[in-house]
Image 1 (tube, rainbow, N blue to C red):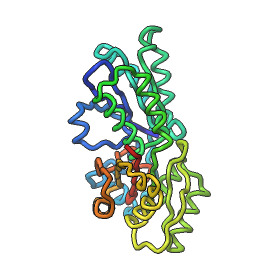
Image 2: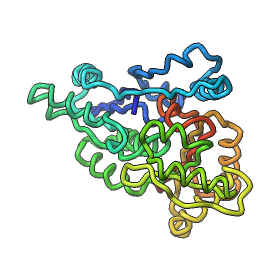
Image 3: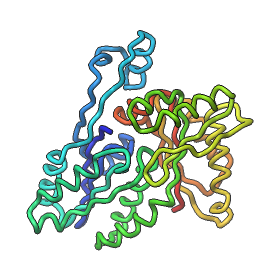
Length: 303
């Protein structure tokens, strides 16, 4: 999977590096002084098509009968190495959080870059596999930022806390069409056909991320639209932690369907009190070219 490498310049002794699979909005990027390293996305057929983002270009490609799919690639070890060296001049230690290694080679690129460093510098770089992406990975990054704000000096403590959080992050999503994800190789033909069949039957097939892999979560029946299906699933899956009075942080990302994303946000805010919807944002072009237009994603964890 193609990704961005992002540097967050934090105050203190620990620098945080992530890739662009977290779909962070511009406001957070600016607030935390995030620098983005561009990624490669190869789809010559649609470069000249109209559209403000990859999703609009993908829709234009469909209308014109273009059958090809985008090709992406993860940041190279050299990309990470350059950032590691630069940031080691600013920070005593570095925490690098990557998109799931089960669907991308980004984690391996970061590890290779770490190994290319000298022995002493290599000991100062820590690489963590998020086992998630998009809104799910965003939650892990937001928690890392929380820890840095709290002034936790020991990077080992932060890593241990993040590792404990990873299995508690829940991501659910719905695709308008599974063909993009299937063409990328991130889901099997069998799973893509299941999504198609469920949709034809008039039910809402849900996908999610478990142990770093995109998988079927279930179906929602008796709902009129995608936001309602995701709302119903959230309601069902969070009953236990809501009964315990736990606060829930939520992130919503979408494939150029802002009205549906906004509707889901409003439904959640109206029904539940003890929640924090940190942001609602467009999915990054690279991940977007893989999941396709019309995708709606909701991720949450207790905080």
